Image 1 (tube, helix red, strand yellow):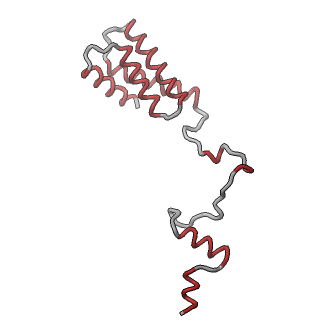
Image 2 (cartoon, rainbow, N blue to C red; image 1 turned 90 degrees about the horizontal axis):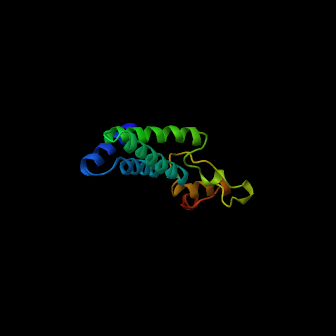
Image 3 (tube, rainbow, N blue to C red; image 1 turned 60 degrees about the vertical axis):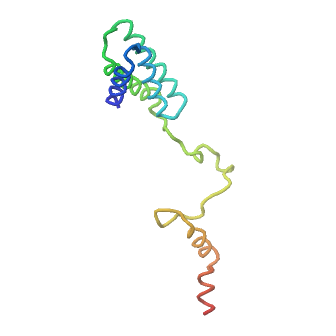
Length: 140
């Protein structure tokens, strides 16, 4: 991932020649946080990018934007792993809802790779032992 930050920093440095290291760090931190989808990671990315960019522009004004980009992404990923390491990035809604509040439950598992239109027919056959296909077959 740091490689992506380096590429983004390099592109920002080449395309926008007068852009300060603070702004480049902020942009790369923002993009790093946006990718994670969660608001707390977005804020962490923005803060990390802004702080590292500000420190770089203050103490290392000649720093290559590619190195800054890699440093921002690396630091963001490190802090994110320390702070949010035990959390899942995406959590299914059913994992957070108490069992008594769930309205719909899938009655049986699918035996194929997908649940399609046949799912209802198969469920109906298992529950009632009857379907349109068996009805048509017995009529002929």
